[in-house]
Length: 351
Image (cartoon, rainbow, N blue to C red; front, top):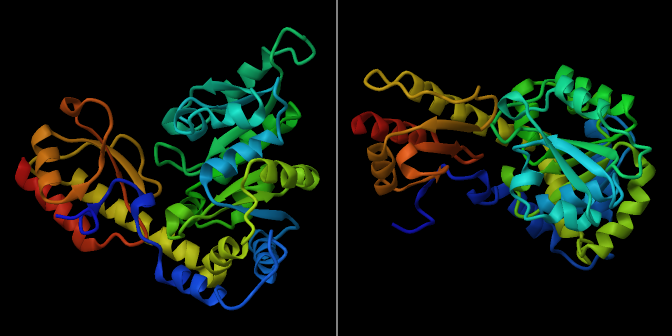
């Protein structure tokens, strides 16, 4: 069976580009336009994001989530500073030292917290032990949180605000890695502002690639003081595209008519359907490791289940030793009920 026809529960990155965004690219591909973000599509995209979040802001398209995250952090901390984040954060485990590289050597300080979330009290305790004036110490400069978290859980508005208050108390910048921001907003049913600038977030990595786009994220500055510096850092970091309109065209269509939330909500619903089916398996109920707030779930399956699922054409990640059976499942904008139900059927007959 070819990789194209296999049933994908490995990552929402593996899903294809949604038709609406592909059409937007084709429509954009008509005649010339000014380069480096001076085109009308990029200007309109920024205005759309201002309307979406209900505030003045600056928005810069980049091609990858790593670029969005690390370039954001580079304007929040000098090379001798530190960024506080959860020990499971994407910037710690999955970006190959890019945060340290782009900040010129800033230190990541890793903290505990249930279900992938930074605990405000743990954060407060850690910061209270620092001495920013002591030249022998690494001064704290920023905090980064992930929404949706690496565990598939979601920060509520109150939880974001609690972290935001700590950032304010210590005069630190607050960055949000929003690679799956759409899934969080769809899950919470809140206005995007409630879990961003109203909660104290200064910079958001606004993800689209995991939710139907080809290759685009937006770095959104709610605190615009650092936006000008970002323009230079983006250029120096090789993420200023001459044909930026093709990135912006995706973002522009992404947020039009609520498409971004429609796709994210579908992915979330498929994850809920999958989790409900696994947990209610009469012969062998499957334990779900964390609350399924969005489109990610972690479960433990037998080796027989894993083998049978793979032979049936399913793609998914086994986390760690195969014999331990820890599996991550991710649903996407195009996951079907039939795929979910077939997954559940194979698990059931595998006993």
